[in-house]
Amino acid sequence: MGDVDSKEKKRIRQLKQYEEELWKQGFRYIAGIDEVGRGPIAGPVVAAAVVLPRNAFIAGVDDSKKLSANKRRALATEIKAMAISWAVVAINPPYLDDINVLNATRKAMHTAILELCPGPDFLLIDALRLPDIDIRQQSLIKGDSLSFSIACASILAKVERDASMEYFDILYPGYEFAKHKGYATRQHINALIDKGPCSIHRSSFEPVKSLLSGGTYGQQPGLFDQDDA
Image (cartoon, rainbow, N blue to C red):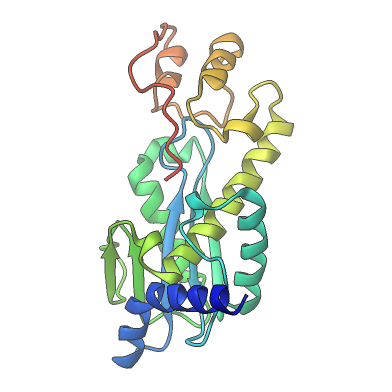
C-alpha cells in the first residue's frame, strides 16, 4: 500500500507542475478551466473553473475521460470540498446554436471564471484562450492530462453534464439521453429519426439540421463515433 501511495503522490506532483511553477512566481489563485460537450448533437456545453490550495492532494484525479462515472462523482465531491472556489456553467440549445458551439464554450468558461470568489489571478485553460478577459492565462493542449487544476475542472464539468443529460432523459423520454449523453450513437440517431428532434437537440448540428429542414440524413463515415472531449 505504501508503494501505491508513493506512486500516486508522485503522479499528482507531476500533474501539478504548471501550478507549482506559477505559485513560485507569486500567483495565489490559479484556476483550472475545462469544458465537456462540444461534440454531442444534443444537450449543453458545460464549463467548470476551480481554484485549489497549493497543498491540495486528491488521489485519483485524472482526465475525466479516463475515469468511471462512479469515480468521477466521488472525486467531484472531494474536489468541491477542498477547493478555494469552484463554478460550473452550462449553455444549452437553442442559445448554443445561435452563437455557435465554440462561442458557447468560451462564454461558459468566461462566466464560470467570473463566478469564482476569490477571483483567480492566473488561468490554466484546456486547449482554448479567452481573449475578452483581463486575467493572465495559459492554454494547454490536452490540459486535462497535464494540469491538476484542469483535470479537476474536467471532472466537475463532466459530472454536471452527465447529471443534466440524465435529467433530460426523464424530461424527454425515448431518446435514451442517460445512456449516450447526447452523442451521435446509432441508438440516438435511430430515435432521432423516429421521434424527430426535441428542444435540447442542436439545430446547427447534423443530422438535426437536416431533419428540422424536412430532409433526410443517411449514414456517413464517423457518424456514430463518440468523442467525450
